[in-house]
Image (cartoon, rainbow, N blue to C red; front, side, top):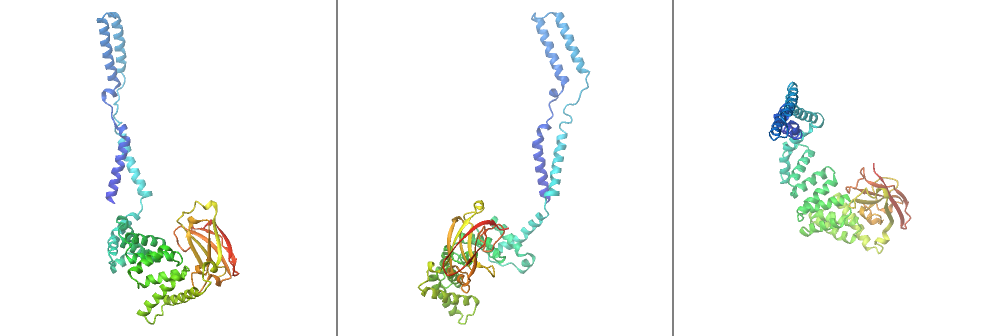
Length: 420
């Protein structure tokens, strides 16, 4: 910090010197002295009078009168007190420069300087080596874990990636840290950066796809599908990719994809663990049985399973309050009971106004289908960061109550408010 203060003082002094330099100049003595100037004028005028007499343009008597008049004027100036012109002109700008620099430094120290700055510098020095080792796949030592909290380590990783952003493993580890803190939006950005830097690494593709699916209530979009299928091309029995792809396809209503993928996952798990009672596999078996039943049913199609036809519009005063790439969630939940949605459709906000169809295929859980609740509420929300959880600043519509009767219900919701 001593170096900072010295540098700040020198810079302030230099700036003030440049600004006040014109005031610092002391004029030459010949130009600054009125007495010397008049003496020079007297001598020039006397020389002119002598030339006029010599050339016959003036007589001697007239010359004497004019000479006496000039001498009287010069004597009057000689009797005036002489001031040292410029004696203080060069002194007060220097005082002003020093005072201005001191005032600027004092103001910064009292009102602008934060005591967090040296702590932040000390934190950077302490966690930077930890972050670099994490990027190389080396976990922090026990002493480093005790000396630094996870938020501190995350800050160190952020600083390291700012200095060198071409580190896919660094972005991946930062995404893992964000996920541990339940921060899906920055985790999604970090995993995407890692995947784009090294798209052939299965860990990056899998984590990116998983985070995308979690942000859309477990549904499978086209990019997530391609990411998971790419992982399975490299490792056909990758259980994590099979689980995400199978359940994502099932929740999205793509039973033709869900059945073979979930069936293969079940076979892979059975070969490794004959008695597998894990909670995830219980859900897999239930989803697989339901998907097979719906594939065998002749009425399994989008038109037959449609329960709601929802038209979503946005108030004109909010049209400039969101970006085209913001995420639009159209959802239905039970009118009475927990606020967790029964079914969700995820679209781009730039598609507004639009109409979406919702049915059991968009249900989030096979054991709690949209058709199982008679009284529901339909709503819509625009999320700036794609989070499935409503946050302040999101744009949302007032919930519209609907009583299901088995026929397709037409519903219109209008996004007209900002979530406080």
